[in-house]
Amino acid sequence: MTGLKRLLARGFLILTVGGLLASAALQSMPVRAQQETPEAPQAPKRLTTLKVEYTASEWWLVRWKGDEITCRFIVDHTGLPIGDEIQTWCGDVLYAEWNRTQPCTLSTPGQTTQTCPGMYLHFFESKPAVKEVEVELPLPSVWISLVGCTAEPPGNRCVGSPNLLLTGEEPLPNEVIISIQGVFQGEPFICSGNPCTLPLKPTGSQGGVLEFWADSSFGDSSPRYEAQIRVLPRGDFMSPEGGSSDPPLYYIDVISDQWRGGPLASCSDTWQSFPEIGGPEPWLTTPQEASALYTEVSLYYLAAMLITNNQVDASSCPDGGLDSALSANQCGLAQARDEVITWQNQFDEEILAVALETGIPAQLLKNVFSRESQFWPGMYENYKEAGLGQLTDQGAETVLLWNPDFFQQFCPLVLHQTRCDLGFGNLISSEQAMLQGALVKKVNAACVDCEAGIDLTQAEFSVKVFAETLAANCEQVGRIITNTTSLVPGQTASYADLWRFTLVNYNAGAGCLTTAIKRTYLGGEALAWQNVSSRLEVACRGALDYVNDISMVNSGVKPSPTSWVFFGTGMPPTAPIATLLATPQPTATPEPGQPTSTQSGYPYPIDTPYPTPTFGGYP
Image (cartoon, rainbow, N blue to C red):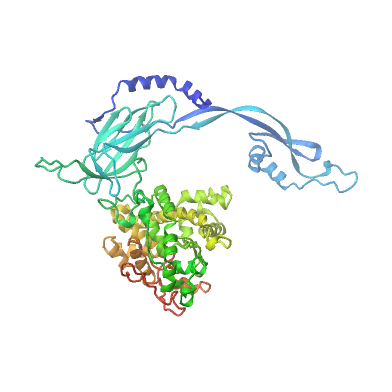
């Protein structure tokens, strides 16, 4: 038993005995309350005082002239005191004098330190000491899961009689959860003891709200949590006429940070949006096995890269198998077919692992990589984009700003922790630019000394970065919609359409999406994809093909540079011309077994007309 546990055990013994006696007399079945909704007891913060052993080091601030001790102070660590400690103990005046003091140098014979101006630090002694520290202890918590049936994807199909299991956790030793209570669809409930089993009943397609919390023998309660729960019966087993032999079948969806019953639909908690009944659309799913992600898509750009990097011998083909530096011809593609298929599927295991870890759909990730880079994770020099998902500086800014957890993991790899603690938005512009550039470089798997010129280990690492980038974009989309409508995103748009908006945000930028959302909302139209997409500015409409391609499972088209849209000022004089070119149109669906045809003239020639946008700032 640690010292903390021993202290808590002694300090809370009386309360524990009383709590255990009380809980022993209670049952753990849910009881419907007959009175008004109970209020969670208001208790002070959990605080305790601990005695901590440390090494006390005494320092003196001494003036050179006369060896005058002007200040004595103690610090609770070894090593030199820091400036803040000297200022706190000795005051601003003495600190300023010490801070201005230059090293004492004896340049002439007979000169002593008594003639040097200013002060110096003198270490006196160190000795063991004990101090009392007030500690805030963690509150209890409650987690929810399903019992009575297992929700099976897709659609969280559940055969059986579903119950919600609420399990309380008390982090303090010798304390217990004595009750769990809450309100579900307006009906209060209370369970004496822990855990609590709550029978679920149909909620309707919009779901119902569950509020829940736990009471502790310590005398306080957990935070109040919320969950959205949708329970939809399917089949004839609930027929009023009765007599059906069908087993009970439900579709069950839960949105809550306290959910422990399996993976949530990605971004559903951010948007408070249930996926479509029966499960999300195929492009928004994560299969059970990586083999389900297998594709055999004809990828002309990937074939060209494999030929150029000596992974495929197409010397027998016209022009060495290439139509251009960016595209294989039909013969080149035929020669590269086996290698193209192997290459596009080598990341499937990592895509699935990242999808299960982050919640971003595996099929979505694979379709994004197919559309953006055709699985060639190097630097697309002409477009300043890198990696499987073609990350730009603007894309790096989005993930660093809108995904704080990712920012806190990545920032210390580049900047000092004290700077990272400020948050991305509070850093100076040069630090932000440094982080953006470092992140783009991190996902660039181009490697001069590697086989095929690609570091495959680096490429696999970047899959997680792109998943976190999509998560950041879904956060930003949620904020755009809430700022525009003052509503939760799930109240304004379907789950699939919210993902379509996220792809627009990822591809064309927040300025494009914000303008389209505002125009749709102010025009009195629902935030459905057909309405919002029709409101996109001309300069942003390349995102339409982008969304359509990715939302078609196993879509495979040529790599598409993100539309860098500059608003209000026209084309910056230093911008690469390629950044202002329209997104290439998708190719026609080939006959079964035939390769996808490649448009000629890609990238577009420099004189391709491009409309000048005339609306607000980006992002």
